[in-house]
Image 1: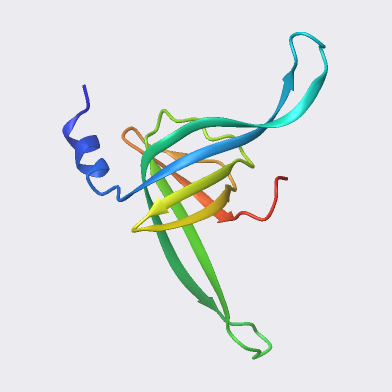
Image 2: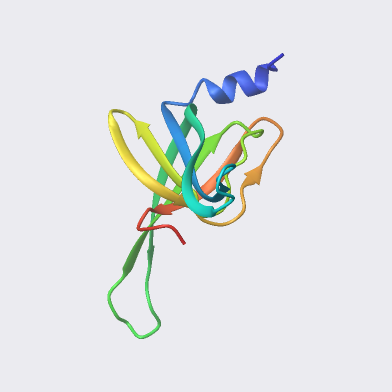
Length: 120
């Protein structure tokens, strides 16, 4: 049974995500192991939030603007490091990769993301 707090948190989810990992798969017939994309889960409810941060340098140079992207989703979902995460929210679809360890809470988890360039 989903508790009231978890239900409240999940009511804020406006998107869905698909997680794809790059894993070693052994062919049962040939016994040859190759790297392949493996879908971990599809269309899982989530919330993507972004925060812009501005920093300045001691040398008086131009301000550096960075973007922090955070994904919130159910705590029981295992998102391996380096996975490709495809998020669709508010009609916009973007690809990200997981960076760092998830911040897991009782009712949800936060995963910091970076724009997907390629698999690590």
